[in-house]
Amino acid sequence: MQIRWRRVTRRELLDWRTLFFTSRSMAARRVTAAELRDKCSAGACWLRRGSSVYDVSSFVKLHPGGEHLLQDRAGTDIQPDLDGPPHRHSDNALRWLEQYYVGEMEAEEPAQQHLRERGNHYTKKETHYSDGIQFHPFDPEKDLVDWEKPLLWQVGHLREKYDEWVHQPVDRPIRLFQSDFVEWCSKTAWYIVLAVWAPVVVYLTWYCLTELAQGETRLFASFTKEYAIPVPVFCFFPLFFMGIMVWTLMEYGIHRYIFHMNPPASNYFLITLHFMLHGQHHKAPFDSSRLVFPPVPASFVIVPLYLLLQVVLPPVVGLSLFVGGLFGYVVYDMMHYYLHYGSPYKGTYLAWLKSYHVRHHFEHQKTGFGITSTLWDRPFNTLIPEDAIKDY
Image 1: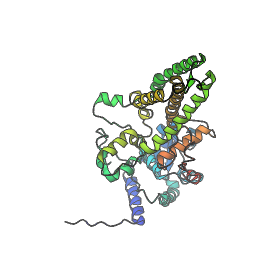
Image 2: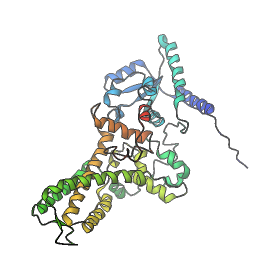
Image 3: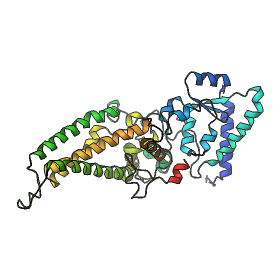
Image 4: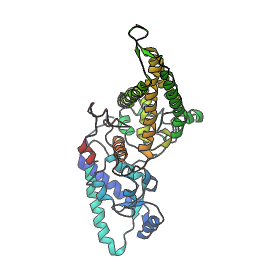
């Protein structure tokens, strides 16, 4: 039997969306105005989008715009805020909201007509979705993978569907491996990075300053002793800073060309590798156990860099560069965690950087590769455009 395919028009897609929300409304539990008020009075953050009700209490502290933006709108209709101005929320942001769906508002008799009009307004506002993405609220039982099993060995079978699937974030933890021990090794709390690498940075800094203070370190001493250049102790600081700058370039390059490689749909191995390195972070961006790099796999990059610098440069000079780069890495990992779980003050640089990084996750996955800064996004033309930022 031959299967005949046809292109679905945008009008049909919108009609299906309307049918979906209508069916969901009929089957959903009813939420009374009194229940909504009681939940908000008790400290929960329940929001309305038209007649639909959402409990976003667990997401309040993670909201890129700050906690107060959601808390101040508890119990109210947020549809105008989703549409903007100032920020029109992306398809993924709206899909994310659906994970917190509670039910439908029960119409009160005096306000029956008013609520019906608001429901019509809600349907009309559905038309701002991007053409390239079909809106499917997350349902683990109907997803392309089995969430009850480790995901790492499943994603390669998604083939051409992988790229769209992995960039539709969900608010749930990910299990990669079947073995409990291997799974435990793949997760890391943020303070482990500090506990392992911060003492190394402090010790190596002290060691470099002590060695340079002896005045015996010289550049080019292996080629000529007559023209060898002495390296005074104060040179540690520009070398340390240079190491930080080298790390920021590595951070950008790794994020752009390795973490965001585009694995061929036919290559099961590369899709699996991509998901293990970074895809799982885009699928579950608020999984706190997978926001920093485990020390053991990190050492497979750090140790070879240390050995390379020791061979190319005089030991203390190379070590000074290395410790600056290692410090930059630690700052990067801590910054990355903070951009997901921190609540910077509105109007600060960190608040802007948090919003910038969340936009990278939810809408602009092909740009915005800087984490600690946008330093290298600018010269390499991968900065999230200002007009796109305003339209988020």
